[in-house]
Image (cartoon, rainbow, N blue to C red):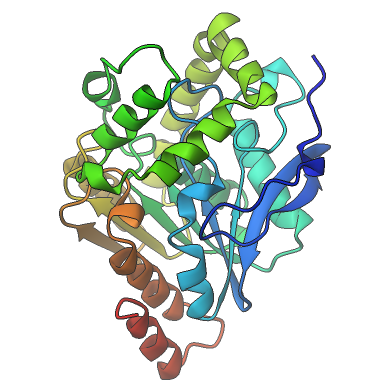
Length: 325
């Protein structure tokens, strides 16, 4: 099946996002958004190919990009391989997390970015950590947000999200899933659901659903490779290979990736990396950057200011002002 070239589409940018841009990354058309100037901050959202009720995209960060631009950074969010409007993997054997990591690293190189402040949420937190371990020269700092995929232990997604409304992929089911991920269901706006439904309706996204579920790539390729790679990644953390400043941010009320798992991850990281921070955002579920964006943005800006190329007190003061904006 030939996928449409979405770069020809003229859909307006989602609210809170700058106009979309495109870059070829290893023959895969990749959509991204950027605003501001200064040291680059790159955001990687969660999820994976072919999720029937949660088609994530760079829109996930629409409450964060402009705030970081206002704090003096070049804020960038991109659609991951096979998600959002970015093209799908070219081969079935590339329906893996490693292919997502490789695509993300190639995206940073395609934009010719200096070392970036990398922010990853959930499965995007795993991808960001793996990228930092494999390509440390591309990364200045690493921020991990509510990553059950990365943290030691077993997640509870299957329990918390086990009975969504039917049919799968309906507007009702999508809203139910994101409300159950969140502490305050009221943060799941119509606009957020609209953004998910638009991706679910794309022909190229339906291809990923068919491959992951119908053709069994999820069970045969994606999940076994991720399990093997997670063991390797945690071993690398235990060996002290993560040599970049690390910040971990966790929603206190996340039922799918509970706080203790975040603490276990922090223990693993901080054992070898003294420059490590752990912040907890109260009354927040799996998406603290959407439930409490001002607090989250302030945590990012201050952490980045502490690690600017030439840190000065004015930069730190400006970062402190972000949360009060």
